[in-house]
Length: 154
Image (tube, rainbow, N blue to C red; front, side):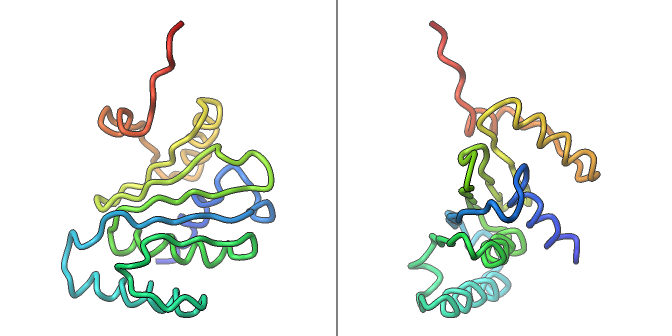
């Protein structure tokens, strides 16, 4: 189980150092796909995380979660929830430099996609994941058409 927190931290900061974290947004966009009892555990955990952050809101009315620069551990803790409970979500980090190089999509099908802005960043990320034996795979056509936009030809 210790591998999942390592993985979440690794992909949440891939290509950057922790000290350059400047905040993030996590957006849950699809839940309730599986068993209500098991997912209910996740709903309660997220509600408790919200309450701990001074925002006592129910799971359903607060699908978006913004984190400050000093809340990287909190952001990773929240990112773990869709990974554990198989919810669709997006993780959009910002950095003190180079913001916008990637974002994550966590799928209820247990797929974490690292969507990169440039091919250079993609190749670097792919190599890093392969070196750690995390078994990266190129995007299939469905994911490519969803997240990638073809270059406009002049």
